[in-house]
Length: 96
Image 1 (cartoon, rainbow, N blue to C red):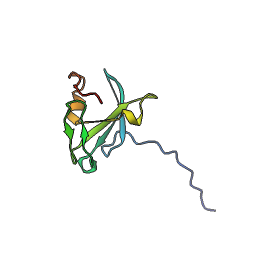
Image 2 (cartoon, helix red, strand yellow):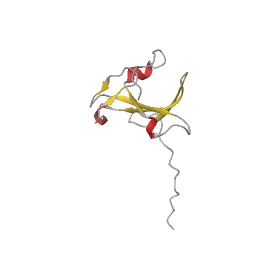
Image 3 (cartoon, rainbow, N blue to C red):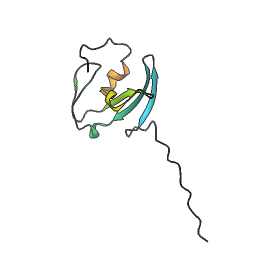
Image 4 (cartoon, rainbow, N blue to C red):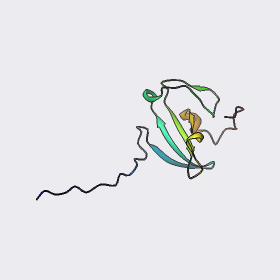
């Protein structure tokens, strides 16, 4: 008699460099962060860290607050260096 394959529980992949989301904690709170490779960056965004454009083809990160209060509307696209330096800088003038 053939063996039945059991249904596997699919766990979300975390921490991959291929664009999966990963949790991050810092002095500014808990975040969910996703890396966007340059090949997948197909739109222009404005970085909240430096108020400059993130152009098409530039690798960057997308971050949003973790937990029940974070939503799609809270996602922000950051330059990788600006994201790493966010706690050492003051806020930019522009409010999104």
